[in-house]
Image (cartoon, rainbow, N blue to C red; front, side, top):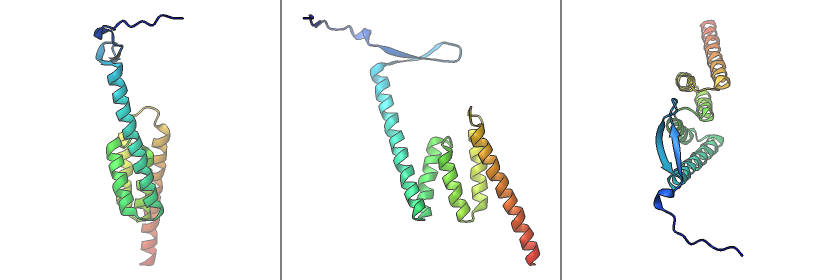
Amino acid sequence: MKKINNEMKHPNDVPVIFSYDDQGRIVDKVSVNEWKQKMKKSQLLEELDIKLYRAAIDYYCVKDFSKAVDLLLYLIANTNYTHYEYVERLANIYHQEKQIKKEKELLITARKHIEPVELSIGVLQRIDKRLENLDNEGKHLSFYSVLSN
């Protein structure tokens, strides 16, 4: 049978996590307990974002666009345009409501925020293609308006 060690640990013996900058210098030191609490908070925020996005999709499906727009704008502002699915869903709503100017402004702003992010080439290509399609639609609409006059 093993002997149980009842020695009290010294308070300075708590494991810590170090944060380093690009030059390898220590920027911050966080105890494991503090790190776990921070992770728990971030997981709760992620769960909230997921629930809000699901609610926005539900509103989108029943064509209650005003509520979906409010939720999507909140999510986009909260994530600083890093979740393109929020931007794309909002752009779809603007497109269905024929608010082409808002759709284009949203896509251009999203492109500016996403461009500096590494590995975002695919998303940037999707935005560029969508902007190109908007420009082509605008040309076709102006062509048909000239013909109808």
